Amino acid sequence: MSLVTVENLSVEYGKAHPTRAVRNVSLQIEENEFVGLVGESGCGKSTLGFAIARLERPPARIVEGRVIINDLVWTDMHTEDLLPHRWQDVAIVLQSGMNALNPVMSIEFQFRDVMIQHTRMSSKEILARSYEVLDMVGVPRDALRRYPHELSGGMKQRVAIAMAMLLKPQLIIMDEPTTALDMVVQRQILENLKLLRQQQAFSVLFISHDLGVVLELADRVIVMYAGQIVESQESMNLLHQPMHPYTRALLRSLPDAGATAKTFSGIPGTPPDLGKPVIGCAFAPRCDLAQSACTSSEPELLKIGTSQVRCIMTGQEVDRDRINLAGNGANQSV
Ligand SMILES: Nc1ncnc2c1ncn2[C@@H]1O[C@H](COP(=O)(O)OP(=O)(O)OP(=O)(O)O)[C@@H](O)[C@H]1O
Ligand SMILES: [Mg+2]
Image 1 (tube, rainbow, N blue to C red):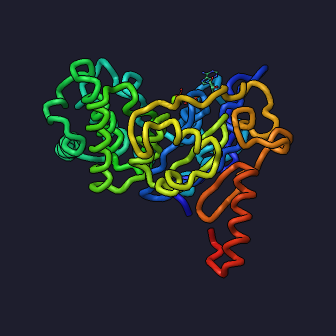
Image 2: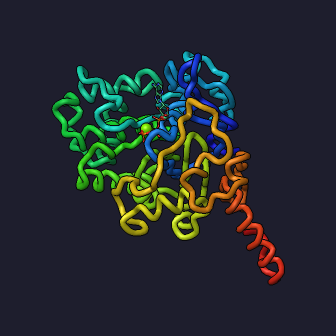
């Protein structure tokens, strides 16, 4: 059983004329897996991340599907029943500036509050764990006595990551955790994140519009377009053998393969309006491979080995390769 299983999840904003921001998403996150979630602005990354953590707020609502974490069906649970699992099983780190830190309380108070609510740790143990997580993210211990406004943006974000790690959750959802920071600080935090994973086992859903950063950090990358998953592959495979035309376009828009910090640019056209039904492949109007079949029916998410792709053209290519491989007597499990 995977740590996280999302089945056919759809999330809408509003009721009268709803925007379907997440459309029938299914995914899994394994224990100790670092999954990157990428896609252009407005494609539904944050909506999906919040819905997985059951932190969706009106007008957002889950209209279909299930989220299962640690064998518990989070989508069937009441808010109060989820409380013991927050921080403990799943923690979330938001973009700096909108992070979870309370501006009027010291860092020490906020750390203590999380641990008191969820554990029976003594004051001594609480202090020791507070120091431990600050050490892990490279923040001086005296930061405990400070208030968020006394810390720089980079320090605040490290503290937010430290706070997320306090109770050793199995999953940390990070939504653009470094986007608002300057390049140097962003790099320091990303390097630190790599080190953290060597010290403590946890899974990450790392949401970013920056495919370069995601490729560098993630074991696997999920690409979203217009509320749907269009591709999922291990990072190295995605980099070298992208399957979906949208993924290929994203890779072409990077300065060079594997490089960091470049927003997606240079894909002509705009994503569809999710307030209206999407007919056929959502990417077809921007796709240079599109055929008439692409605009008539919606492509399914094809499973190819451990990868997934939602494109009939790629499906045909893969089928051709399979036939060729089979003809050559090679391994058929592409
Ligand atoms: N509070 C809201 N009310 C109505 N629609 C919303 C709301 N928040 C988001 N949306 C819509 O849902 C869609 C997905 O938004 P979301 O914020 O999840 O995208 P995103 O991929 O996280 O974008 P970004 O990269 O800019 O953070 C967008 O079309 C957006 O307009
Ligand atoms: Mg977002």
